[in-house]
Amino acid sequence: MNLNLILTAVTPGIALAVVIYLVDKHDREPVKLLVKTFIGGAIITIPTVFLESFLVGFNIFGGIIGIAYQAFIVAGFSEEFMKRLVVNKVAYYDKHFDEKLDGIVYAVFSALGFATVENIIYVVFRFSDVESVGVYRAVLSVPAHMLFAVTMGYYLSLAKFSKTEVEKRFYYKKSLTAPMLLHGTFNFILMSGNGFLMILFIPFVIYLWSINIKKLNIYYQESKIINTVDPDDGDNL
Image (cartoon, rainbow, N blue to C red; front, top):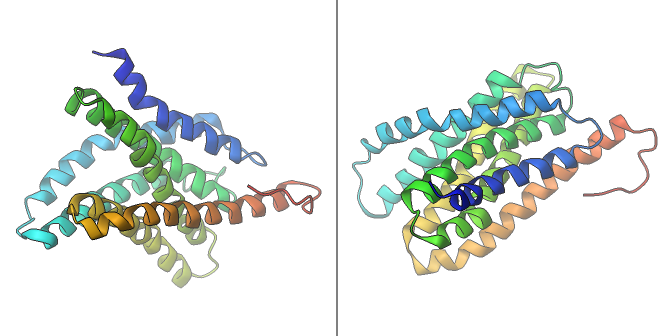
């Protein structure tokens, strides 16, 4: 097995996980719980593959509708549902999930665990003879998983800290549907092969980064205010 390919596959996910850990500087989560969430995301990749294979069997559609089914249901729904499941089982009810930024942190760690194993599958096994795959996935696919997770964690936290059951149910559903739609759109553009849609891909990626950095910064600022004596020092992400 090629060690360089393995390093290429695992480095992006671990590097981004470290970045998110460092961003959460005012009330860092226990490393043990974060590692558990990351490993949970990695392990959940295996049943997700079987779920996706099962759902593919229902794709009776042709053309653009079939591609949309593949992008939004097979990939978008399956992967985001399973990554959220890990957060729910490992961290959602833990006492350390005590502020809104935590939802993003745990969702990102679950997603990056998932993305790391997925990366190994693609880079080391499926396309080991195509060097550009590792670069492409390091620049686009793995960061995309992180960005979908920021949206997921943003709404998971709104659900967890909602004051009413109606709000809780609304945001909990949105913690799946919102990242699912972003994930599906990302995949749909790439899978379509449509020249016009491909023109929209870079603006869409810029949009992904923009909205999710804003979401992350909202909770970062809230964490800073809660956990520091002087909340008016103007520190921003």
